[in-house]
Length: 289
Image 1 (tube, rainbow, N blue to C red):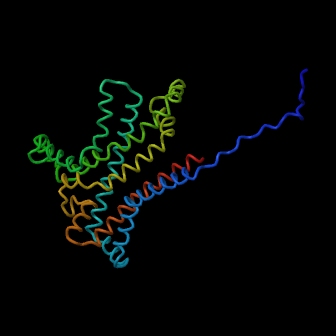
Image 2: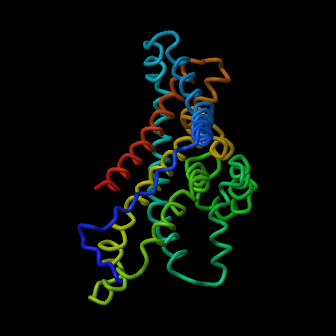
Protein backbone atom coordinates (compact mmCIF):
# COMPACT_ATOMS: atom_id res chain seq x y z
CA UNK A 1 0.00 0.00 0.00
CA UNK A 2 1.33 3.39 -1.00
CA UNK A 3 1.46 6.09 1.66
CA UNK A 4 0.78 9.60 0.43
CA UNK A 5 2.43 12.35 2.46
CA UNK A 6 0.93 15.79 2.43
CA UNK A 7 3.04 18.92 2.53
CA UNK A 8 2.30 19.31 6.19
CA UNK A 9 3.44 15.80 7.00
CA UNK A 10 6.80 15.90 5.23
CA UNK A 11 9.60 14.87 7.55
CA UNK A 12 11.97 17.63 8.48
CA UNK A 13 15.32 17.43 6.74
CA UNK A 14 18.13 17.85 9.19
CA UNK A 15 20.69 20.52 8.21
CA UNK A 16 24.27 19.32 8.08
CA UNK A 17 26.10 20.25 11.19
CA UNK A 18 28.71 22.98 10.73
CA UNK A 19 32.12 21.54 11.17
CA UNK A 20 33.99 23.40 13.85
CA UNK A 21 37.23 25.01 12.82
CA UNK A 22 40.01 23.03 14.38
CA UNK A 23 42.32 24.79 16.78
CA UNK A 24 45.27 23.72 14.67
CA UNK A 25 43.88 25.38 11.53
CA UNK A 26 43.07 28.52 13.47
CA UNK A 27 46.59 28.80 14.87
CA UNK A 28 48.04 28.12 11.42
CA UNK A 29 45.99 30.99 10.01
CA UNK A 30 47.11 33.39 12.73
CA UNK A 31 50.70 32.27 12.34
CA UNK A 32 50.68 32.96 8.60
CA UNK A 33 49.16 36.40 9.15
CA UNK A 34 51.78 37.17 11.78
CA UNK A 35 54.58 36.09 9.42
CA UNK A 36 53.25 38.33 6.64
CA UNK A 37 52.80 41.34 8.94
CA UNK A 38 56.27 40.86 10.42
CA UNK A 39 57.82 40.50 6.98
CA UNK A 40 56.22 43.74 5.71
CA UNK A 41 57.00 45.56 8.96
CA UNK A 42 60.70 44.68 8.80
CA UNK A 43 61.14 45.57 5.13
CA UNK A 44 58.89 48.65 4.83
CA UNK A 45 57.46 49.97 8.08
CA UNK A 46 60.61 49.84 10.20
CA UNK A 47 62.79 51.80 7.72
CA UNK A 48 60.07 54.42 7.30
CA UNK A 49 59.67 54.83 11.05
CA UNK A 50 63.41 55.07 11.53
CA UNK A 51 63.63 57.65 8.74
CA UNK A 52 60.96 59.82 10.36
CA UNK A 53 62.64 59.59 13.77
CA UNK A 54 66.05 60.47 12.32
CA UNK A 55 64.69 63.41 10.32
CA UNK A 56 62.95 65.01 13.31
CA UNK A 57 65.56 64.06 15.88
CA UNK A 58 66.64 67.69 16.33
CA UNK A 59 63.20 69.21 15.85
CA UNK A 60 61.16 70.38 12.91
CA UNK A 61 63.10 73.60 12.18
CA UNK A 62 66.22 71.87 10.79
CA UNK A 63 64.02 69.80 8.48
CA UNK A 64 62.36 72.85 6.93
CA UNK A 65 65.71 74.60 6.81
CA UNK A 66 67.26 71.72 4.88
CA UNK A 67 64.33 71.48 2.46
CA UNK A 68 64.49 75.24 1.81
CA UNK A 69 68.06 74.96 0.53
CA UNK A 70 68.09 76.19 -3.12
CA UNK A 71 70.28 73.25 -4.14
CA UNK A 72 67.80 70.78 -2.68
CA UNK A 73 64.88 72.58 -4.31
CA UNK A 74 66.66 72.54 -7.68
CA UNK A 75 67.26 68.81 -7.29
CA UNK A 76 63.61 68.17 -6.49
CA UNK A 77 62.38 70.22 -9.45
CA UNK A 78 64.72 68.33 -11.77
CA UNK A 79 63.45 65.02 -10.38
CA UNK A 80 59.82 66.03 -10.89
CA UNK A 81 60.55 67.29 -14.41
CA UNK A 82 62.23 64.03 -15.44
CA UNK A 83 59.45 62.00 -13.80
CA UNK A 84 56.68 63.91 -15.59
CA UNK A 85 58.36 63.44 -18.98
CA UNK A 86 58.83 59.75 -18.21
CA UNK A 87 55.17 59.34 -17.28
CA UNK A 88 53.93 61.13 -20.41
CA UNK A 89 56.14 59.03 -22.72
CA UNK A 90 55.20 55.73 -21.10
CA UNK A 91 51.52 56.66 -20.87
CA UNK A 92 51.48 57.00 -24.66
CA UNK A 93 53.93 54.41 -25.89
CA UNK A 94 53.45 51.96 -23.02
CA UNK A 95 49.75 51.82 -23.82
CA UNK A 96 50.52 51.23 -27.49
CA UNK A 97 52.98 48.45 -26.64
CA UNK A 98 50.46 46.75 -24.35
CA UNK A 99 47.73 46.95 -26.98
CA UNK A 100 49.99 45.51 -29.69
CA UNK A 101 51.15 42.66 -27.44
CA UNK A 102 47.55 41.69 -26.63
CA UNK A 103 45.74 42.35 -29.90
CA UNK A 104 48.38 41.46 -32.52
CA UNK A 105 50.09 38.16 -33.34
CA UNK A 106 53.40 38.42 -35.17
CA UNK A 107 56.77 36.73 -35.39
CA UNK A 108 59.04 37.74 -32.52
CA UNK A 109 56.15 38.69 -30.23
CA UNK A 110 57.33 36.39 -27.42
CA UNK A 111 60.85 37.81 -27.64
CA UNK A 112 59.52 41.38 -27.54
CA UNK A 113 57.36 40.49 -24.55
CA UNK A 114 60.42 39.12 -22.75
CA UNK A 115 62.44 42.26 -23.51
CA UNK A 116 59.86 44.36 -21.65
CA UNK A 117 61.04 42.79 -18.39
CA UNK A 118 64.74 43.47 -19.01
CA UNK A 119 64.81 46.54 -16.70
CA UNK A 120 63.82 44.24 -13.83
CA UNK A 121 66.88 42.06 -14.43
CA UNK A 122 69.53 44.62 -15.39
CA UNK A 123 71.21 46.74 -12.72
CA UNK A 124 70.51 50.48 -13.14
CA UNK A 125 74.26 51.12 -12.90
CA UNK A 126 74.77 48.84 -15.91
CA UNK A 127 72.06 50.78 -17.74
CA UNK A 128 73.87 54.05 -17.12
CA UNK A 129 77.15 52.53 -18.29
CA UNK A 130 75.52 51.22 -21.50
CA UNK A 131 74.21 54.71 -22.22
CA UNK A 132 77.71 56.07 -21.68
CA UNK A 133 79.04 53.58 -24.23
CA UNK A 134 76.46 54.86 -26.69
CA UNK A 135 76.42 58.61 -26.03
CA UNK A 136 79.70 59.36 -24.22
CA UNK A 137 82.56 61.33 -25.77
CA UNK A 138 83.93 58.18 -27.36
CA UNK A 139 80.52 56.51 -27.68
CA UNK A 140 79.21 54.79 -30.78
CA UNK A 141 76.62 57.49 -31.50
CA UNK A 142 78.78 60.46 -30.50
CA UNK A 143 79.96 61.18 -34.09
CA UNK A 144 76.31 61.49 -35.15
CA UNK A 145 75.39 63.90 -32.35
CA UNK A 146 78.48 66.14 -32.21
CA UNK A 147 77.80 68.01 -35.50
CA UNK A 148 74.40 69.06 -34.09
CA UNK A 149 75.89 69.95 -30.69
CA UNK A 150 73.54 67.50 -28.99
CA UNK A 151 74.80 66.39 -25.59
CA UNK A 152 73.28 63.29 -24.01
CA UNK A 153 75.85 62.04 -21.52
CA UNK A 154 76.19 64.18 -18.38
CA UNK A 155 73.13 66.12 -19.48
CA UNK A 156 69.37 66.05 -19.11
CA UNK A 157 68.61 63.89 -22.21
CA UNK A 158 70.75 61.05 -20.89
CA UNK A 159 69.06 61.17 -17.49
CA UNK A 160 65.64 61.02 -19.17
CA UNK A 161 66.69 58.03 -21.29
CA UNK A 162 67.98 56.21 -18.20
CA UNK A 163 64.76 56.85 -16.30
CA UNK A 164 62.68 55.75 -19.28
CA UNK A 165 64.59 52.47 -19.42
CA UNK A 166 64.27 51.53 -15.75
CA UNK A 167 60.56 52.40 -15.60
CA UNK A 168 59.54 50.76 -18.89
CA UNK A 169 57.75 47.62 -17.61
CA UNK A 170 55.30 49.16 -15.16
CA UNK A 171 52.77 50.63 -17.58
CA UNK A 172 52.88 47.66 -19.93
CA UNK A 173 52.58 45.03 -17.21
CA UNK A 174 49.61 46.80 -15.64
CA UNK A 175 47.71 47.15 -18.94
CA UNK A 176 48.33 43.75 -20.55
CA UNK A 177 46.16 41.68 -18.14
CA UNK A 178 43.44 44.34 -18.17
CA UNK A 179 43.30 44.32 -21.97
CA UNK A 180 43.26 40.52 -22.03
CA UNK A 181 40.34 40.43 -19.58
CA UNK A 182 38.47 43.13 -21.50
CA UNK A 183 38.39 41.13 -24.73
CA UNK A 184 37.52 42.42 -28.20
CA UNK A 185 33.73 42.11 -28.34
CA UNK A 186 32.97 45.73 -27.45
CA UNK A 187 35.67 47.04 -29.78
CA UNK A 188 34.27 44.96 -32.62
CA UNK A 189 30.76 46.21 -31.87
CA UNK A 190 31.95 49.82 -31.98
CA UNK A 191 33.70 49.18 -35.32
CA UNK A 192 30.52 47.61 -36.68
CA UNK A 193 28.60 50.77 -35.75
CA UNK A 194 31.05 52.85 -37.77
CA UNK A 195 33.46 54.11 -35.09
CA UNK A 196 37.01 54.80 -36.20
CA UNK A 197 39.98 53.17 -34.52
CA UNK A 198 40.71 56.31 -32.50
CA UNK A 199 37.08 56.70 -31.46
CA UNK A 200 36.93 53.05 -30.43
CA UNK A 201 40.01 53.37 -28.28
CA UNK A 202 38.99 56.70 -26.70
CA UNK A 203 35.35 55.90 -25.93
CA UNK A 204 35.39 52.11 -25.50
CA UNK A 205 38.85 50.74 -24.68
CA UNK A 206 40.29 53.52 -22.54
CA UNK A 207 37.32 53.73 -20.10
CA UNK A 208 37.54 49.96 -19.63
CA UNK A 209 41.27 49.98 -18.83
CA UNK A 210 41.37 53.31 -16.97
CA UNK A 211 42.22 51.83 -13.56
CA UNK A 212 45.05 49.76 -14.94
CA UNK A 213 46.20 52.90 -16.76
CA UNK A 214 46.07 55.01 -13.58
CA UNK A 215 47.90 52.37 -11.56
CA UNK A 216 50.55 52.03 -14.25
CA UNK A 217 51.07 55.80 -14.32
CA UNK A 218 51.34 55.86 -10.53
CA UNK A 219 53.95 53.10 -10.37
CA UNK A 220 55.91 54.65 -13.22
CA UNK A 221 55.94 58.04 -11.51
CA UNK A 222 57.00 56.54 -8.18
CA UNK A 223 59.78 54.53 -9.86
CA UNK A 224 61.04 57.58 -11.73
CA UNK A 225 61.14 59.62 -8.53
CA UNK A 226 63.38 57.09 -6.82
CA UNK A 227 65.83 56.28 -9.62
CA UNK A 228 69.46 56.56 -8.54
CA UNK A 229 72.07 54.29 -10.14
CA UNK A 230 71.39 54.92 -13.83
CA UNK A 231 71.08 58.71 -13.53
CA UNK A 232 74.20 58.83 -11.37
CA UNK A 233 76.33 57.14 -14.05
CA UNK A 234 74.91 58.91 -17.11
CA UNK A 235 74.27 62.27 -15.40
CA UNK A 236 77.36 62.50 -13.26
CA UNK A 237 75.56 64.13 -10.32
CA UNK A 238 76.78 67.64 -11.12
CA UNK A 239 75.44 69.87 -8.36
CA UNK A 240 72.98 72.42 -9.69
CA UNK A 241 72.88 70.84 -13.14
CA UNK A 242 72.36 67.07 -13.20
CA UNK A 243 71.76 66.38 -9.51
CA UNK A 244 68.37 64.82 -8.81
CA UNK A 245 66.80 64.40 -5.38
CA UNK A 246 68.25 60.91 -4.91
CA UNK A 247 71.72 62.10 -5.93
CA UNK A 248 71.35 65.02 -3.54
CA UNK A 249 70.59 62.57 -0.72
CA UNK A 250 73.68 60.55 -1.65
CA UNK A 251 75.87 63.68 -1.64
CA UNK A 252 74.42 64.86 1.69
CA UNK A 253 75.20 61.50 3.29
CA UNK A 254 78.71 61.56 1.86
CA UNK A 255 79.22 65.05 3.34
CA UNK A 256 77.69 63.90 6.66
CA UNK A 257 74.83 66.36 6.32
CA UNK A 258 72.42 63.85 7.77
CA UNK A 259 69.49 66.16 8.45
CA UNK A 260 69.35 67.22 4.80
CA UNK A 261 69.64 63.64 3.61
CA UNK A 262 66.95 62.35 5.96
CA UNK A 263 64.62 65.24 5.14
CA UNK A 264 64.89 64.79 1.37
CA UNK A 265 64.53 61.02 1.69
CA UNK A 266 61.46 61.46 3.86
CA UNK A 267 59.78 63.71 1.29
CA UNK A 268 60.51 61.30 -1.54
CA UNK A 269 59.36 58.28 0.44
CA UNK A 270 56.14 59.87 1.65
CA UNK A 271 55.29 61.19 -1.81
CA UNK A 272 55.75 57.76 -3.39
CA UNK A 273 53.72 56.15 -0.59
CA UNK A 274 50.89 58.64 -1.08
CA UNK A 275 50.87 57.94 -4.82
CA UNK A 276 50.60 54.19 -4.40
CA UNK A 277 48.04 54.29 -1.57
CA UNK A 278 45.96 56.90 -3.39
CA UNK A 279 45.71 54.84 -6.55
CA UNK A 280 44.85 51.74 -4.51
CA UNK A 281 42.05 53.58 -2.69
CA UNK A 282 40.65 54.86 -5.98
CA UNK A 283 40.65 51.36 -7.43
CA UNK A 284 38.90 49.93 -4.38
CA UNK A 285 36.22 52.64 -4.56
CA UNK A 286 35.67 51.86 -8.21
CA UNK A 287 35.29 48.13 -7.51
CA UNK A 288 32.76 48.84 -4.74
CA UNK A 289 30.69 51.06 -7.00
